[in-house]
Length: 468
RNA sequence: GGUCGGAUGGCCGAGAGGCGAGGCAAGGGACUGCAAAUCCCUCUACACGGGUUCAAAUCCCGUUCCGACCUCCA
Image 1 (cartoon, rainbow, N blue to C red):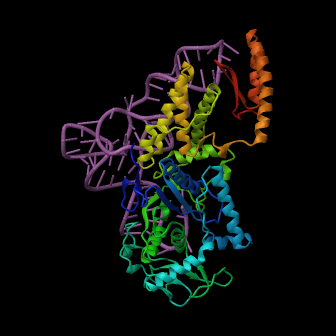
Image 2: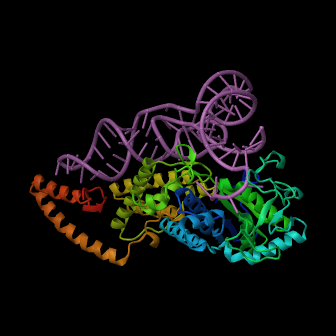
Image 3: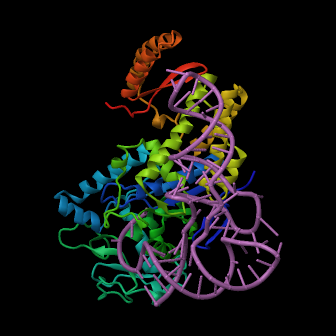
């Protein structure tokens, strides 16, 4: 059995993953700033790290997974003005949209999902520590800044030099000792929400939130910190600065997922190439969108196109089709089993594309076994495929994707009706009346129901390509 | 200006000195009354120019093009 190796943005190398505490893993993932509905770039991050979490869990670790919600920030305040709604109502509205998107894609809920505004006390404590240690200062205007020149480790994650950074265009540097110092806390402006602090009323800076929440739930040092590539600077750099200046060990390893791109460019709301999750879910199922988003390596850009998504969904349905046939033949659901090929791929920095190749091989073996009537191979293939799909969060038998009881009742009734038609069709075929048999099949096809004649008799499935 | 990433077949997408990843699409074949499903076969690619090497998509040098970050982006 190979052991898990993961990439680390800090060292830019892949190395064996050794947790701080045997059998336990703590992960902090930067979640959403809830100021707009989620697009597929946001949920790709969720899916990538959900796969990491599931693989760690499958590997026997007890995983504590934190994904925060940034529910106070400039963009939320702007949005509140635009929507003529209280800032907290805006935040809640979009937080729910994210929760629904994650659920539709079978992203497991985090162990804890802290909101920034629920941790103001911890942030104030952290700032007090930083001021006492001489790392931060409150110039008297209500802001609190971190003095970055005092930190030797500053910018080691992004490998930049302080003097090479472009000066901030918008910063009011009146109170800063150095223009690169960043705000831990922002003084309240008239009309903005604020919380009282020893330095005056204000609201948290983005970076401070994550340091405070990571400390609260994972302690002074933890195993993995994750997020999108675009957070390396300044967000993660600043998180390191705050936490290390406070004396914490902080994250031992940094994982960053790459973007979803469209026409080669990063998907973003501002350039208008973003695709909202709920829009895409009108054309594919959640399990199919997840399969697509998870199919590329997490550190590779994923070039989105509707065609690629549709093709990916087609491929997934092939796998599902085999699993369904295996259930019909074996009479039982497959038992999730992890193959060596899948293990080796996942242990190699989550090489999902290589893992998918192992699924393809099992699929071919399984389909051939159906033709050959090789029950043992049908079962072993189905077990292996389901095991892999489970880790990838795309197990069709997962309750998260299961239909409700009411739907199952309708399905049973529908099956009865279609079987009546198929009996007529079989009778027509037996008397070589193919005009009549094709008429029945065409009629069902027009309703989006596809008929396949197999060695075990006709079977039907809803493919949704009907003209209704 | 600084830092970082990328360019692989019709398309998506792995690999990182030698063994044609895989998928989708397309073409052919098997099976079938015809389909569908499935299986088999075909389609031998690595931006460009040098170099290292017995051997380069992979390493080195240079070039072109694309993208990202540089103080509140997943």
